[in-house]
Length: 110
Ligand SMILES: [Zn+2]
Ligand SMILES: [Zn+2]
Ligand SMILES: [Zn+2]
Image (cartoon, rainbow, N blue to C red; front, side):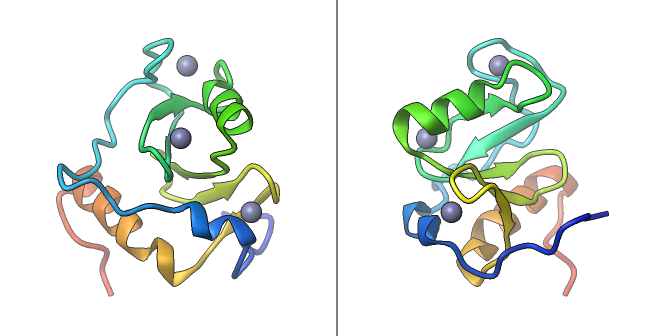
């Protein structure tokens, strides 16, 4: 359930890079603290780090490296740390598809 309507565009969409050929591992722990509960993947460098309700490692990574676009490995939503909003755009389809494939073993139902 979203309390807010996602933005349809943000200037940081240009930071999103191609999904690695190895795909996404949605069960990966945080690279810094090994936490499993609430992780995100950076859509610029594909590091997996924990969210703001754990140790905020992804937030720190985003601010330090100016990598603002992140995908939730829990609900596969995309958040921009700079715009402070969920983003929904066709550029993100490929990465969401890869995450869905790994998490549920199947493609996003159309
Ligand atoms: Zn962490
Ligand atoms: Zn990054
Ligand atoms: Zn943004």
